Length: 440
Image (cartoon, rainbow, N blue to C red; front, side):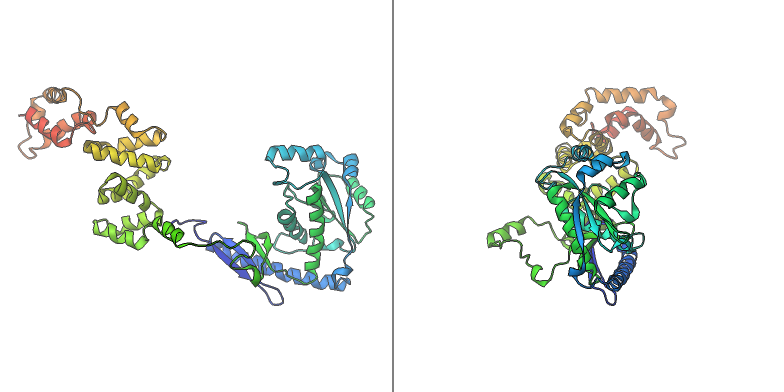
């Protein structure tokens, strides 16, 4: 089981009196919900106020809306300001190249166009507040981004928040060309001809929705507590099963095949690990953090001891990770190689930390090659003579226990000298025997 942001997903539904249900889809963290609910409630109240303002202006039906799209591609090329280079063909083509957009995939059909959408009598609506820090122009931008597929920032420009990078002369020229009066708003969109036409129509449709207040939508959550358009909220006829998909036959063979590949249930794993003598804290870490899968794999495929594998992945690797060893770089196949190696040569267990560090440093190299390069798993020639020589160099005082208080002290001192070179090569019990014989 995975935890952390994104591991769970909540769909938050919000409505206010007079509004409609809006679904905020896939909230990745429960702590986001209060700000999202607050922001959506404010948005709906403001959209209801916009509806009333439109009605006051005489916009009570779609027929009352007078929205016209005018091609201004050539005009922008003549009077375009250097700060709005994305409105020119060369700026558009440069952005396409930088982002790898493909015609007929991310881009619609047709030549590059810049379109001015005149909103007769709707000048003040573009800056109408919706969510905290957002205006109705953001509502238009969300629809254009999703439905028309035009997502080059800033997605649109409009007359009530004209960018400072451009001078007032350019806006004046565009308004004059579109025959805008003082009460008219102006929105600029750009891109492939087909997508731009879709964007202009989507602006009209969003104003049609505004006449009715709050549209049924699915919206995506953003970390700052705001939301953006995701899709129109489907009605009951479009829910489960999805009517856009052809029916697929589910056969018994397919079900059996899928069932055979399912991982063990968490409570089954917990019970099996408990029977092997693994403490509760370690069991919960393995099951909840996803390490149980590799534990079961090395046990099944490599013949590893279950208890050892649980402690290895649930305790030892956690300690190495805390000390900065990038154990997450080691893939499952490398772990299988590691457990096969220590199964074939148990002496390697004594050097497990050194081996894991080597694998983490070179995760693409085979474990066998790393062991061979370091000379691990094989006893050095004449190692007993080397142990005897080291013990002889310690001197008689070191080989004699002090007042017989700790008779094992000389042996431990000798082991500290010889074990670094023999760990992972010679079994520790054999080294202890050799040291004891040499110190008699």
